[in-house]
Amino acid sequence: MNDEEVNTELKKMVEFIRQEAQEKAREIQVKADEEFAIEKAKIVQQESSNLDAQFEKKKKQVETEQKIAKSNQSNKARLEVLKLREECLEGLFEKAKSQLEKVTNDNDKYKKLLGDLLLQGLLELVEPSVEVIARSGDVQLVQGLTDSAVKRYKEVTGRTTKVSVKEGLSKDSAGGLILSGHNGRIQLNNTLEERLRLLESDMLPELRLDLFGPNPHRAFFS
Image (cartoon, rainbow, N blue to C red):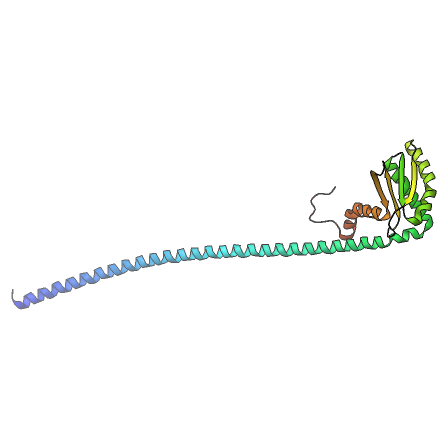
């Protein structure tokens, strides 16, 4: 084989090797591209899932914060309403207290009221001897009511009792009586201020219902 033939064969071999190398390179490139695409898809999917998870976490956090803020605002508004309602009731009671003095302006009505308070006190104490404390200006008036009250007390209970009257109520008192028995160890406050306080306590639920309607947060009603 001469030199020319050798060169020709060598060229053929080089061309074959180059072609094989190019095909191998293409195969490697195709495989690398496929692996890259797969890995890219995995990364994209993973990051997408991470973003979705973060979004859901942020969404829930925002929803929770909104609920808390709404609840706080609702509680604040409810407390403000309750405060205003209590102020309204306190104003109503204060106005009622300011009207107590007018009770004594009508002598006949006040006299009857004192008689009822005296008898009610005697029936509640059920003592053989009762001391009655009144305003200085009411002592004679109350003394004039004792015989009738004692008589009525005996009719109801079948018992007798002795009643003594003395002054002792504060000059600032609107009126009424304080009764004591058992040597002062038992005492019954039947002053107008105390009777109004008891009335306020008893009527408070009814007043709230009349003024503000039923409480939507109340689960049980007696």
